[in-house]
Amino acid sequence: MNDRVHLKDLKLPQELATLSIPQCEQLCREIRKIIISTVLKNGGHLSSSLGTVELTVAIHRVFRSPADKIVWDVGHQSYTHKLLTGRLKDFSKLRKEDGISGFCRPDESEHDAFISGHSSTAISAAFGMAEAMRLDGDRHHAIAVIGDGAFTGGLAYEGLNNAGKSSDNIIVILNHNDMSISKNVGAFAKYLTSIRRNSAYLDVKKKTEKILENMPIIGEPVKKFIKTSKSALKSVLYHSTMFEDMGFVYLGPIDGHNIAELEEALRAAKKLRHPVFVHVNTVKGRGYSPAEINPGEFHAISAGGYNAESFNNISFSNVFGKKLAEFADNDRNICAITAAMKYGTGLQNFAVKHGERFFDVGIAESHAVTFAAGLAKQGKLPVFAVYSSFLQRSYDQLIHDVAIDGSHIVLGIDRAGFVGEDGETHQGLFDVPMLITVPNTVIYSPSTYSELEMCLDCALYHTNGIAAVRYPKGTENITIEAENVDSYLLTGNGGKRLAISYGRIVHNLYTAAGDCDVLKLVKIFPVDEEVLDICMDYSEIYFFEEGIKTGGAAETLLAELYEKGYRGKFVIKAVDGFVKQAPVESCMKKYGFDKDSMCELLGTNRSEMIET
Image 1 (tube, rainbow, N blue to C red):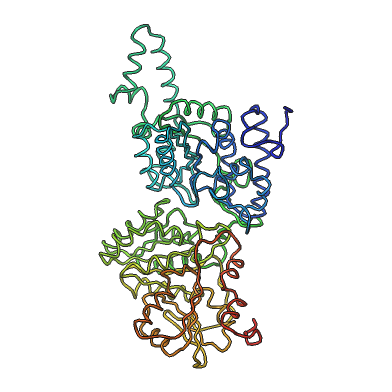
Image 2 (image 1 turned 135 degrees about the horizontal axis):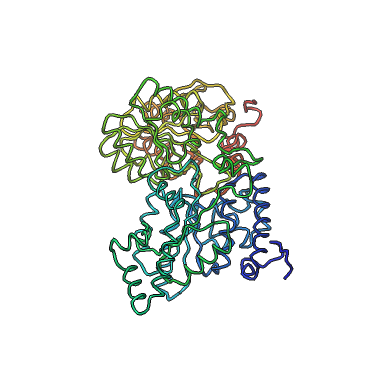
């Protein structure tokens, strides 16, 4: 084979094993160029994928996917994996509508062993696969690749606890780069750093074993005794890690950018036929100096290469964060909580002004809710700012730890509604049906910045129990000026047709409504008695809801109206099923929330539409 190789000329991933180390290193440089150019154009997760290029190449050289199951935690570090598993031709369409996902999708490739998008799931999933393979007599491996940021989530430890007790062929690879999205926090991050910076004990292991191996007769028995004992001698000589204490063979730390060293460790792990924990040190953003210097800034970027979070731009997230910080200026009971999303949720200002009352709990949404409940029990006023799709992970805690006891907490639900290119795992479409089922919950959905500030005030000081304020990603888009309210607003001429909506799409409805009266809901649950009375006067009602139809605000209103005796026409336009990656504007059109689609459903002539 020629010294120079190119991705397009290789049968992948099979031919990776035939390459020399220098050829692999050259291939890694090509992969980085492709990832950088594609992500700068399409947007996506840059730093994390650049940090795992050599690691991914090594994994695919040692293991044989799809027979060996490679499970990527979150999946935002898997772009190299996509390039090595038959998706080079489609990689230019990464995160594009009708293109390939920015995360792992089993329906996209047989090499994507498990769906990804949320954190801390890989170990549990890989363990399940390893158990199934053991039951079937399959001697292949399940490999979980998980970042240290994901170890701030409790599910990772639940998986470790069970997998370590098994005799399965499971390998957990820790990609340790000291970062998640925000800087890693907590005791585990400090623990990993101590291992990363002090690898001298590995030399002690090797030297001790060599000495014992050279001791005639007694050396090998003593070596076995030390390894299997729980004595202080083992602790001194072998410096047992928590992973070993949980049942894993521990290998590391290993240079995550040295292919030869990585392969040596992975081949050793493969031979052991036992749960193995491989600790790999990587540099987030490797090979792209702006991302290496500021990996958090380049964790996720939008198309065109600028930061996806737009930290300094005006957005619903930043308006929420700034207003909360203002309230906290005069109320020392207000506390802010984030799950590793300080900048994404706009809480950076609060963190600077009120650092002693700002809590980043890591990627641990369930813990965040129960932690908030504990704060509330001691008289504090906790506000948990969280993405809609991540709040799903806290359903039990909302019911058991908050609602039953009637504790008052505030949820700032960011990324409500369509989010675009991140796709199914991140669309904020399920929070309303979820929260409606929880007693003692009030849900606000403002459509403007000023309504958001008003709703936050209501949530903090004029409600009890769980008070949720949900708002979309990005900026406000006001087409028709309307009065800002904290409950509802009816506009029209007293006709018999009523159009209802809430959140950002209500502005499209104002434009398209024509001769229909419009009811803008801001407090969408529980349903106000006045709203029911208003609806009873109309023979036709059309409800547009940027969320899941089943159990949503529209179905809830319909059920209550039916009990009240309403028998008129009631049409719901909402979302059924999961929504793939596509620009928000395309999602709006596909599901009937753009102006033209609303006009068509309402039977409004285009000439009657209010032009803006």
